[in-house]
Image 1 (cartoon, rainbow, N blue to C red):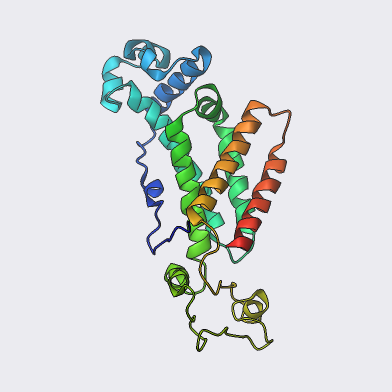
Image 2 (tube, rainbow, N blue to C red; image 1 turned 30 degrees about the vertical axis):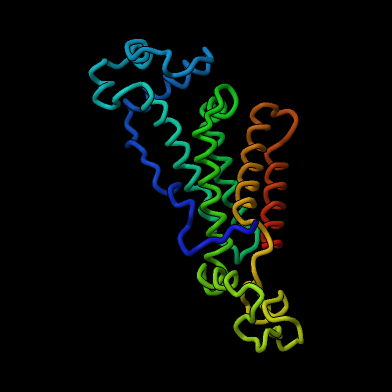
Length: 255
């Protein structure tokens, strides 16, 4: 089944994750929680507020001035990571430069990964968080959606119009025939687009299940990162980057 997409990014919720302003106090509290969860392998709900305050060297009143409960502390840890992941993936929305922007996004991601490796290891390996993974996937899908729809000639509306043509005649054709370029190739092919310095436009309905492609791409990337965190000796980050670039190329080609 082919899944239609409209002009509104269906993954837009990823752009609206709330993040508490980071202060030295919140940083100390959240770091103390991550360290305790990593060392003990126990969930945040098992740690009392008093014990966390002792580890973070803050008063209980200070804790409650910043958080309502322990669960909010842990959620804040996840949200900070998610916000940084969202921001470092922004460059990949540019499709005109091939995979150059994808590599820039990946390099930005690596910086975030190294700066917060303990947090990543906690939410992906030691105590996998389904919430974190789901929202990270949604963030990646958000940017891939923009890459494949917004950068097409005519924007997302044009792509959806193509899907609505179905088996009928597309704009620029007559009697259901195929439009042709000056080179005699079907309009919208790579050669035709190259001559006009434009991205190729698919002349016909989508040939892939779009939602499935988004999910598979995001899942594959997160799986690669998780694999590296579990077995860093078995794979290198450059190897993951090469796989990501290849994956993006493949998606661009089949879209």
